Amino acid sequence: MSEIRILIVEDQTMLASALATLLGYEKDFRIVATAENGVSALEILAEEKVDLVLTDIEMPEMDGISLTQEISKKHPLVRTIILTTFARTGYLQRAMQAGANGYLLKDNKVDALANIIHQIYAGETVVSPELAISNWNAKDPLTERERQILRLIEIGEPTARIATAINLSKGTVRNYLSEAISKLDAKNRIDAARIARKKGWL
Amino acid sequence: MSEIRILIVEDQTMLASALATLLGYEKDFRIVATAENGVSALEILAEEKVDLVLTDIEMPEMDGISLTQEISKKHPLVRTIILTTFARTGYLQRAMQAGANGYLLKDNKVDALANIIHQIYAGETVVSPELAISNWNAKDPLTERERQILRLIEIGEPTARIATAINLSKGTVRNYLSEAISKLDAKNRIDAARIARKKGWL
DNA sequence: TTACGGATATGACAAATGTCACCTTAAATT
DNA sequence: AATTTAAGGTGACATTTGTCATATCCGTAA
Image (tube, rainbow over all chains, first blue to last red; front, side, top):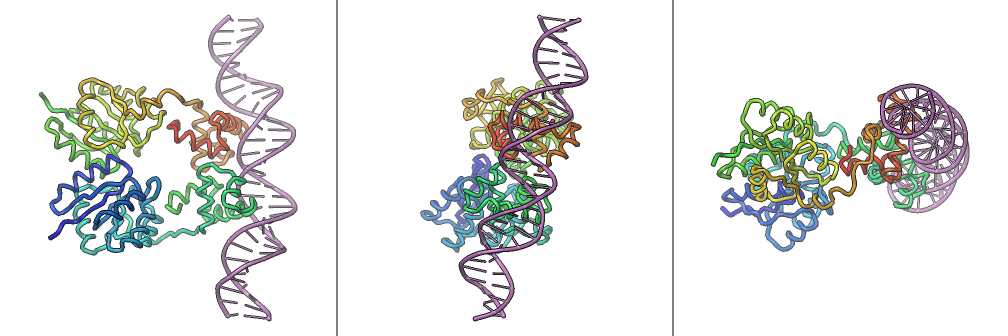
């Protein structure tokens, strides 16, 4: 049986190196490389043969979900496993839609990982049970515009600057915000951004 | 030479288990236990002999800085190493004041950890170089009231509710916010909360 | 005692925010 | 061709937010 060639994408160096070392002990695993964001991961994928990518979600430059999308497009044979802290339904849905083969929480022992990697390499889809349950209850009610604006709200941009940034009138931006606030049942724009973020919709 | 008895406090199970395994390979380290927050860490400290605690900062129940304070008080001989993602000067300062013997970023390879643990066990104080540099330049300009209010702003509370919550008049709350915004050179309350959070002042 | 500084409050004003009803334009649907 | 729908815009209005000058109360230093 041939070895499984694995690429680890994780911006927290300590975890990345620990995973590389520990998974490297498995006889049939070969850690090809570790990358600290999606962009460098894609560079490696273009050059090296990789069977399976283990990736975090929240990373600088390019996040794990966009990476998964790119992999589905450019390297359809490569399996992708999302490994994240966040049990957010929004993330899970987007990850699966992007073509992920597994979605695991960092809330598991490393030991469990090796087995799961084998399962997924064999063609199964694995989702952390914590998520499988609370899965299809609430889905993202926001439009792309609303999400876009909330992302700017989060970093403290006032209406006027948001309007300029995305080429809309101030009034329209306020209309979208008003909609978002009402959809999310929030107290104000800050609350709306917070709620959306917590659900994994941003 | 006797072994160094280590307690790992980290809420991200995957990293905790990985560290436990990897550090456990060192001949003179003995991983006594892993805890997932400060409270259970203190319980273990009360029962087991521990020489050194390796702790995260952001955890549920009791954070790593409060834990460090408690350890300094109740177990003054135990060394404490903070291990965190955040290169925030505010965290560093508070950690050192709480009596930490080391402050490391999760941005290092695991290999480096073993050496540093030896150094710290030998009595040295170790701070990640990334932090040592940009250290004493900016210190928290906020008053306790301002911090308190910014923490409520973060979760989307409007002025009126904040005023009720902390027994001040609406006007006073707005005055404190105005002060905070100006001190932090922020665009508005959201921006102020964001900046303060990023610096580790909340 | 008096003076000073800190914490809190008030009022006034401008600017930003939240809500709503209604308008325009350009697809997409029938 | 007529109609619906989606995306964006406008104007009006009430509320909230941000700024500032000024005031009160209290404890402490001179």
